[in-house]
Image 1 (cartoon, helix red, strand yellow):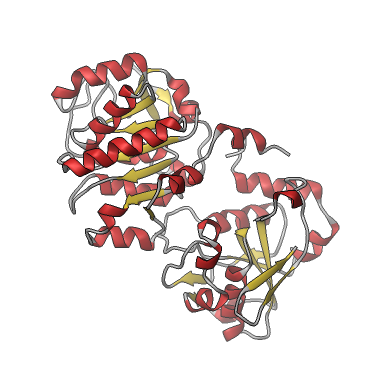
Image 2 (tube, each protein chain N blue to C red):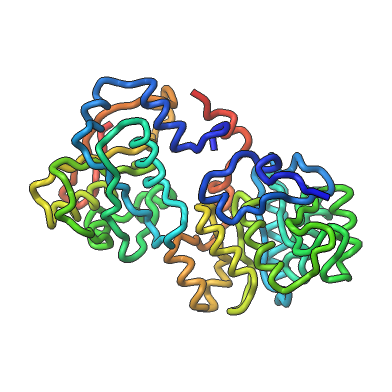
Amino acid sequence: MSGTPTEQLLGPLNPVELRFAPAALWTAGDTTLLLRHPRVAIVGTRHPTPDGIRRTQRLVKALVDHGAIIVSGLAEGIDTAAHTRALELGGRTVAVIGTPLDEAFPKKNAALQKRIAQEHLLVTEFAPGIPVARGNFPRRNRTMALVADASVIVEAGAGSGTISQGWEALRLGRPLFLLQSLVAGGLAWTTEMQNHGARVLASTDDLLHALPTDDIRDAVSF
Amino acid sequence: MVGAETAAAFVARRLREMAPAFITDFLGVDVALVPVPRSSLRRVDALWPPLEIANELRAQGFGSRVIECLDRRHAVTKAATAASNERPKAKQQFESLALKNPLDLPAQVVLIDDVITRGAQLLGAAWCIWSQRPDVTVRGFAVVRTISNPADFSTIADPCVGHVRLGRDEECFRLP
């Protein structure tokens, strides 16, 4: 069983994007979401604080109100909050997972995964039968950075897999935003990411202004 | 990407096709193309749009070679996304940059950038080169120039030559 070539789904990729792009992706659902903009990844810890959940929900609302597609990784915590809020609001969402399509991790998100596959879009770089291993998830985060026009890290500790997504977004030259509350925590990696171009998300307007839209892409022809 | 080619390749190809007369002189065969560092620090394999642009210009026959001789020593605020009063001035740009192998530079250099706002980054980069090679003629090239007043906007493709000058209050001014 073969997946679909990544460039067939996402469009042509530049050499920097191709470096870590999987050759193929397996999908279930509406793949046209991968050609619509803006797509914003909202990611963070599997063990969020109540404030982290509330901030995620507010951010998702602001983005859905502006027609953004919410991308996340279907993990526990911030990811689940992002997908769930997008669904509640009638927005569109894309889940980039670290397992084959027919497996769910965590198992308790199986129903959410099924709904996203049926009504929205589920994406993975892992072919059917590939065992679920810890190393899948940082790879998933790297691919999620490629799928999204921008990434936002809500909450994450020093060892979080989310950090790999942040670095990949910066490598790709895509906007990376860190929530003000996260930066205030004084973690060394947030400072380092800011030195490499990450921006502090003080208001959703900053994020919205950094995003591409289909209108702008259509206009650039001369 | 623009269609099947990168944005940098698209711009370089269109510039070659449009071929305004001044470009042939500006990006002539005796000119080295020097990409301007990003405002932030950069990991080795990260996207560096000015380098992409420089390489694509070279592939279209502009300039003599691409020289990666400028490094960012510490991050500065990105002018294109900052409020006007928060944009770094040319002096801050200069102080955040380092020049490698200055003797490799030929007599004429064109700094390559993606976006020019007021020109402080280009001026800071030129200042960095002149600090060690005052004999080098340095000019700047950017793919996009910002336009503050929408009424001044007439067309997307509008190649032009202009000037960046330093005011008494250390603010840069770009014309046009």
